[in-house]
Image (cartoon, rainbow, N blue to C red; front, side):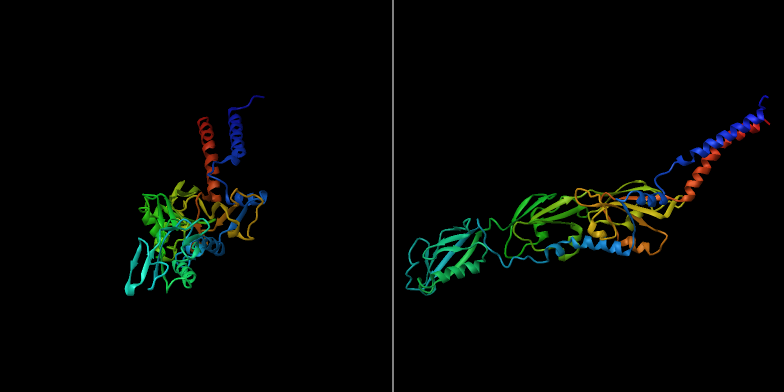
Length: 387
């Protein structure tokens, strides 16, 4: 029995339809659906999917604020007054009332009011053990003391030997109480500190200022084993962050290249650079043109991030850790909830975040139907031609 032409075409149409149905699982897409992301959490225990809410946003915002200079180092220097240190050069002058017995002679001896004699001693370099040597007074501990304290110690030692002595100590060269200014400044500098308590912006000015725009410059302050960074713009806007410096501080100006990547059903898929002062989720969505109305799932906005455990607390745990101690987490954002827009204004994006917007389920169905119809049209045309 031979197959008629009509039967052959029907068989061809059924075969084509079957092939399209079998291939429905390979419909083109820009990434996982909302269900796929949620299902992934149950399969991979190392990654948590968290709904972004006001508490998480507040925790992330507070952590960024806690890294400020004022909170980390205090708004004022812990050093009380200006103290001498090993390596500093001091000038010591001693006055003695007449009849002067100890400091009456010498090339540096001078006669003052009422016949009082003064003696300027040779420059005194504070030794490695922190002392200086004064005639008739012996070794005096200078390191860690203010000039007033050094004067008082010398005076105490001489009071029983000299006639109504008076002492004046002056720091001639400050070789140790300095701040180093490096990085993206016009001139790296080593700035000496004075009793005036120089501040962070004073150090930046000593280096000639930042060589990059203010909104792209970050200031890093290293004090001992503490390292904190803030945007220069934030330091300028908040006077509390312009903290008093301490000896040994290192001020580094950095030009940061921070960015996040947006993928999926957004109006723009690309890497977006942002300022050193940071960017919120709301601002990030605005910069990429928002969500595509015709294909995005407003309940399926995700932020993929390696997060600090202290931000999450007990909300998420993971056995996986990056070398710097962070854990992988996915924040889920429901943009159909009006309150989310307030949360998005406070939630900061971080460098290297991935912002992904999933396709709506209807979009995948539409793609599948288009694929089926595009495959059936040629078969229908052939069938119509044979009639």
